[in-house]
Amino acid sequence: MKLTGTPFLVLSILLVPFSVALLMALWGRIRGPQAVRAAGRLGLVLFAQVTAVAMVFVLVNNSNQLYSDWGDLLGTDSHVRAVPPPPPVDGTAAAKSPDQPKVIQSFTGVDDPAVPEDVKETQLKGRLSGVDGEVLVWTPPQYDDPAYKDKTFPVVELLAGFPGSSSAWFGSMDVSKQLAPLMKSGQVSPFILVSPRVVLLPGHVDTGCADVPGKVDAETWLWRDVPQMVLDNFRVDPAADHWGVAGYSAGAHCATRLAIAHPDRFRAAIAMSGYNDPKGEPDSLTAKDPHLDEVDNPLYMLTHAQTPPNVALYLTGGARAGEGLDDAKALQKAAKAPTTVNPVESASRHATDTWKPMVPTAFTWLSQYVKP
Image (cartoon, rainbow, N blue to C red; front, side, top):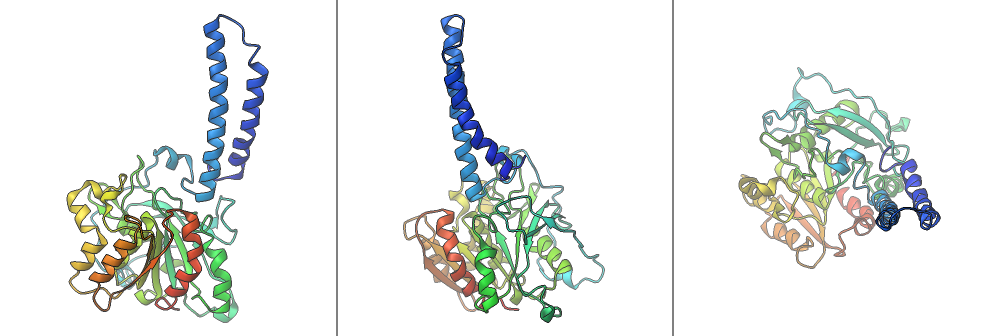
């Protein structure tokens, strides 16, 4: 039974009145020595409390889509099949190679009632990264219009925070519901929206979207394997001018660093309430390695780039220390043409209800840089 499914939600709600009724019915009926009666009553109270806490957890999880399944919640699942050496840093290499077989995928509906029915899911085995995981894809209203049958479409890769489900952008963030009417009216580019799995390792470990030798090739998964699957299955142009990346919280950190590191793949990035230094994230894998902690900092990457990357960054954050705006302004100060950085002050509340209302404005901005 999925954590985000309606059956589990209904079960968690029904267990609360059942546990209370059981407590009231059995309180005075427990027989035996005083210690036995006390233990029995304590068990009934604990059962009632556990069901109440579980119901609250399910409601919060469904609202924010932090964990999609039991493996994510318990930290038992690994989505890393192998950790091969990362490929050469050329995001268009696979697209140019005539020898590479296409990554043709089958797509099904998403088993999550919070996700719209027009969002499709595929299970991708990363050829270069050794990562296996689900990827959710939504095509814009124009995609199936006969008038656009020969047209290519721009792509935005969507990265959830940590912990975070690949469904979160389509569920709690309502990205497709918010953008579809804006795409129809021409206010926003008709993006294909792609949301890959970002929780890859067991033990509640945040990969930092990095390639960590011997542990995970998360970066290769996100900027090589996932884009290649999109190129092979949808009408898209491989040029970076037609690709963007967006994220919130830990996903914002990833979006910023991926855009700076790979301007041959991503032309622009939206980062909501992100950060530069991963050291402040206790679950971050890169923060535990002094070298990776230094080089996977977007500010370090920007200031040490051989040439300023041709990317545009839309970075939001609260004005209080540690809420993201200071980091955004540091990147703006360090940026040199053609890099552009647009810091935007947001509420300091680090939650979906801060990021969700920003989607229309942020993607309208993105449409200036990532076009069909």
